[in-house]
Length: 298
Image 1 (cartoon, rainbow, N blue to C red):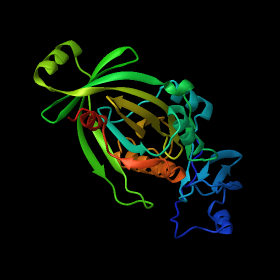
Image 2: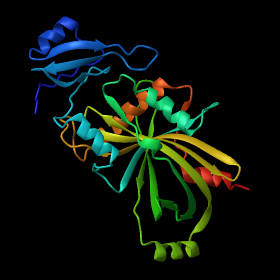
Image 3: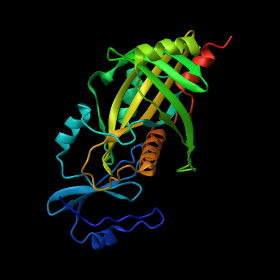
């Protein structure tokens, strides 16, 4: 494995091209990719050492290194969902409302995909057909806990969620909020019977979703980027969601079981996409459960 020294620069201390050559004595800066063409990111420097590609200098002047595993193998792992995840009982996600006159479900996903053209840090991996999912979900509530019953790929599931909001400080002129969900799958027949008798029925909706995966080349973490259109009665909710999905091992920058790194990764990716298409995205914390409650209000 290539083990170059890691250099980090702030935006107030950006080195000149000549000083970069001095800093990276054993790294050859081969060329600069221009990405100023109406997009959010800045140019990225591709770094090579001993004839091997070792990483990039990103727009925030942090060096990201790819792992020694061939990218072709990494792509195959991601497409097959062959990766693991820390904090399996939690979900970390960012939500945006999709606003204005928008294209259809796949049209929204394509707009998001185009944000990554030429980027070196965030690498998209498209799933055939957008891994399209259409499912009906029924919601209940008991003692402030949310229950949702639905089918996923013909498997019946009951998801139990407790919510908390993680607020972050202002970063690059945008406030983000994160949801953390504690959820688990349960013995359906017994629990569902008890739930119907003891919990309050909230409502139901039909959810249509398409998604891709995005790899962060700095640490090997993977994020699901999804467009969801939900309908309940005569109301519709259109949202874009970014959720931490797991990681591919072997990346030098990866820190296992590090919640702070996951949150900052979500911040970086959500900021990047928002700055690319701000006209159609609005930061949101509205849950599906809250959308259902509004739809069923008398």
